[in-house]
Length: 88
Length: 413
Image (cartoon, rainbow over the protein chains, first blue to last red):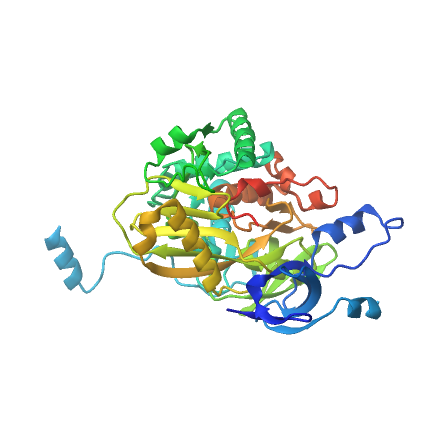
C-alpha cells in the first residue's frame, strides 16, 4: 500500500485518490493561437523528474497539489491549491 | 531421433549457428539508424533490407533484444477498431500476421482463434454495434453476438444472469488472434541480420547532432555514428528519445501491468475481454492464462508491479471464470506505455527532415509489429509518408484531427 498525505485528511491509502495529471499553464482564451491551444490540450508534462500535479481525495472531493518524482514515484510534498494561486 | 540427438550432444562442433550474430563493432556511418531493438524496429529493418534493398542499417538497442514492451505485452492481434483509418491499418497488420511464419521462415505460433469482447451494459452494446458495422464496412470479420452467441463461443463464461454484471452480449472478432511475441522479434532479427543489418545490443543513444533540420549523427554509449535517416521506435522511451532531438511528443507514460497463472490444460479457446471489468484473458500455448487490463492510474516511468492492480485483475478474471479462484499466479510484470491523447499511434514525419517516428504505441503496439515495420520502411525508403499512414501524423494534434480509438481497447482508462 502506498500512502499519499492529503493536506486536509492526512496520510491515506493512495487508492483513495484520483490523479488529474500535471498542472498546465492558464491560457488567455482571447489571445491564444490554435497552435498553443493544441499544445495546452495535448502535451502534458512527461519529463523524467519531479512534476507538480493535481490530485483529488475522492471521499471528501478535495482537490490539492502534489510534487511527485515520475521515475522513483516518491511524493516529495503535497500542498493546498491556494499556494499555486499565491505563486502566480 | 534419439540417436541424432545423442550424436549432436557428443559432437565437438555443434552444427548449428545462432539465429542472431553477436554485436559487431560500430561503423562510423549507416544509411539508416533505427533506435530501438524491439519488434517494430526489427520489423522495419527486415522490410528495409528485403523489400527496399537498404542493408546499411544499424538497430541500436539500449538493453537486450526485444526486452522492452515486445517482451511485456499480452500478444493480442486484432483489427476491431472504430475509425476507418485505424481499421484499414490494423487490418493490414492482421493479414501480415496470417503469413508471417512463411515470410520469416520462423514459427511465430500465430493462432487466429478469435477475440470475444463482452458487454455488461446497453451503452457498451451500442458501441459494439458501431464497431461491428464499421468493421464489416472495412472488410473485417466483426459482428455483434447476443447472450446465446456468447455462450456458444465461450461456454465456460459466468454470464451472471440477473446480476449486476450480467453479460448482455459481445463483439465477436473472428480475425483476432495471438502469436508468440519473442518469435516475432527473433524472426525479424534473424532475417534482417542475414541480409546485412547490424543489431547493436547494449548500445544506448545519448544524444543527437542536429544541424538545421537534419540529424547529422547519433551519439551512443559506444561512440558517434553518422546517419542518413533515423527512426525512433523505442516504446516506453519514445518521449525521452525524441526530446533529445528537440521533438516534444504529446505522450504521457503509464505503467501497464499483466500476469500469468500456473499452466493449465487448454480450456480457453478464444481471447476474452471485458470493457467494464478492464480485464482480458488469453491462454498461452504453454497453458498459462495471461491476464491483463487497464493501465496504472497515474503517470510513472517504472516497471514495478503493485498488489492493487494484481487484485483488480484477479477480481475481474475470477468474476468471468469463477473456477479460476484456486489457481495460482506464476509471474507478474509491467511495461512502460507511451500513451497518446487519442489512443492512436504517431507514425511518419517529425519536425526534422530525416528523423522518422514510430511512436505512441501505448498499450496497443504488438499487433502492429509487421505493418508498422513494413510501412515505416516504405516511408524511409521513399522519403515520403504513404497514404495509409497519413492519418497518424504528429500534426494531427495541431490541426485537431484526432483519431479517437479510446473505446476500442479493454485497457482503457
